View 1 (cartoon, rainbow, N blue to C red):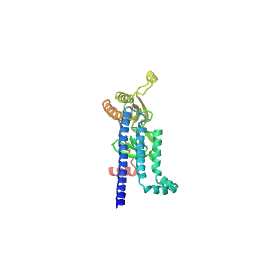
View 2 (cartoon, rainbow, N blue to C red; view 1 turned 135 degrees about the vertical axis):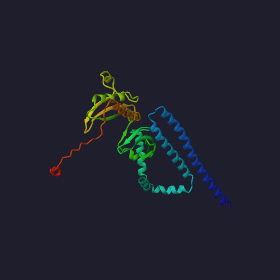
View 3 (spheres, rainbow, N blue to C red; view 1 turned 60 degrees about the horizontal axis):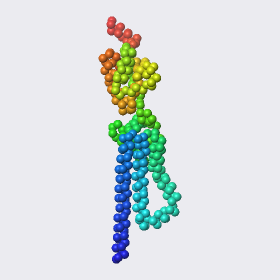
View 4 (cartoon, one colour; view 1 turned 135 degrees about the horizontal axis):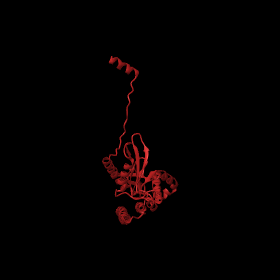
Length: 296
């Protein structure tokens, strides 16, 4: 009877110890993450360029702490020790099996490490893909990159996939961006007046950025370049090069400028044409003979 009680209380004590170890592991992860996130937030406010690395390390540290805690808890279970010894004999086969099973997961982790090292994009960068997907990089975890699109939805892409994608990074090396503003006017409109209006509206916008070099300013190069680029079927197409400090400012500036140019065009009599077709009707000989008979 005493042996049974001893075994019972021993098993119960072991169970309590396992629960305590797991709870301590969870608590340590929470505490470390809380302290680390404060550090990351301070770095973000200071504009630290290593913010992406810090975020990736946050996930790595959590995974390591969980791995250590769970491994220690398993080592406390007596009956798993002989099982572990028998497993060592088949370690090679298990390694191959685990390798195949975790191939995709390991590929994502390795791709995430290469993304953090090479930095094709970082946290808060605005990126877009060939398929039209675009948004702001919000987080890079061990397995996934999380992108917040402009509808505030989260797009989760495995690191192994995004690392092989062709993407456009609006913040890579230089945040300045040039927007091409194309406007067509009718053939009867004053081209010089239209170019002047476009240039003035862009230059007067508060978000327009002067991208000229000191030599350009000295040589009298205009702040905004406007050129005729094409004689289309029903319009003369003009193009303006408008610079802004970053992509969000460029979007707002483009929307405002298109509206102000349209209003100025309406006041100054500059016509923005729409596609038109001239249809010519040619009468056949049969139609002519029929019309002659009707006349008689």
